[in-house]
Length: 277
Figure 1 (spheres, rainbow, N blue to C red):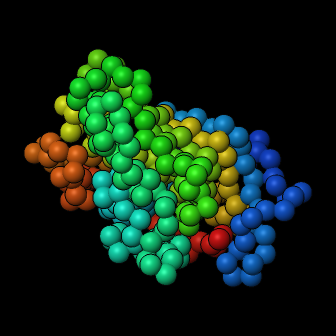
Figure 2 (figure 1 turned 90 degrees about the horizontal axis):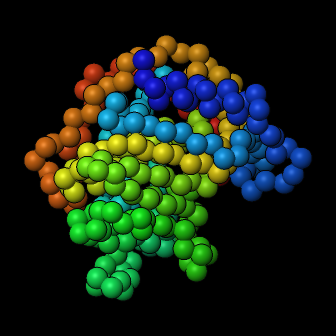
């Protein structure tokens, strides 16, 4: 069985049994169908660890669209784009402005150049530079939560920083997330940043190690509670094997086709979910 499934079940039960409801206060999200308040039950400060040397952390309790998840993480971290036309899926269409962008959010922030002692680079190129020239650095961080430009973003970044750290020949990472819709986005984000860690590792001649996922606000929406209970009661399957094209050595040469999940068994899709906006 997949360890990602076991952690998901443990986390969901923790939220449902020990979480706090926000029904006593006004909330920003609304249900798209009737614009009523979309309340949540949440746990603060959830931390999960995934050892990528052991297995790829994708759920089998439900189908996760792996190719679409990879495409989005490449859109943010490799293309550094805010244009929805550069993304294969339509998951960001609802947030697009009249120019077809999501404003100065996500990839836009990673692609902005800054002056370092080593020269002018964007955040991703600086991280790659440090991994090559100074792997012992404790400053290998990508951060998208730019306070000066939050007002110009279609959505404040949820998964906002990624810290890399080398131990011997192993690359580990911490993903910091301010907010996580547990049913919709939890394992989607885990799978994405596991792929990103593999990309940084392979392009730097390192082995992928631990991904530590730190969530400030881990929540389940009220209308999602019966659905998530049904999901965690499903059959679990063994974790699939991740196959990465060994010929790709440059971070910018990876494509969605560079990654294949071998023997990905799952217990089916989740039906159409109520949408909070």
